[in-house]
Length: 320
Image 1 (cartoon, rainbow, N blue to C red):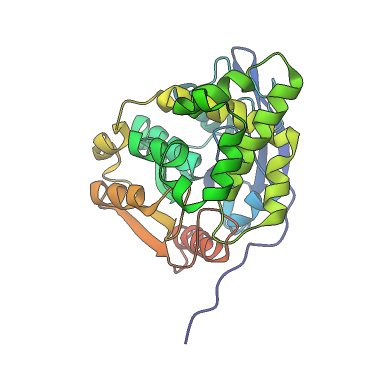
Image 2: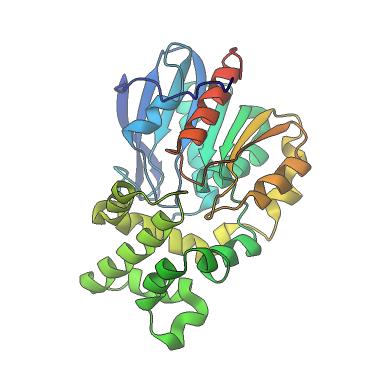
């Protein structure tokens, strides 16, 4: 008999919200949910340039966890909006340490999907003594092959008509470097140019996020309040190779050798294909890889939700 899949925990409101000044003109919006004093965890949203959503609060048992969620620099309710200056991987890692100390946690569970998995690995390799365990979804290691797959050749062969829509905004002579071409438009002083580019960039990411078409998700991705920070910050990070050396997160996997973890990976993930999760698993023996055979990339897909909740329950002392 097939075991019934888990669904998100019931809707929950934060027991505390606020802003954390991290310097250089940036302030981060923070939420805390669950039970004060329970098992600490931190949620890292995707992007770069995404943000929190109410559903993100519901991935942990609120009776057993004290979860911190925050909008990264330039994202969501953090200020300044859509800011790309003083915004990079290692500044965000430092922001996480400030946040951990602000909350008074000695160690915490680090939970991140997509770009959030990249950030989780960077943080864990920099501060392994502060990580109780890692829960990762849709692993992205920011290697050249993964960047090429998403913005040059690979995903383009699977989502062919959506790729034509995405590239159609850019003149043919500029299509040899789509990230550079989009970044020029996303940083334009012309508001219409910037909004058009943000919408197409964000929609492309939305199309590759789910196994089956999801109109409501695409509508959400096209919302300018989300598309602008997402596209601007994401393009900047791609242009700068995510501020990482090639294969850095794999090469430095020894730093997390003693940290237990679970990777939840969709078999049909077009955005971050399973090859990266498998490469990480081989370099990180304490990381368990759970492949979801009927899922793509998005955290909202039923099989991914089920895996993530089983992972958080497992580390809270329950069964997986």
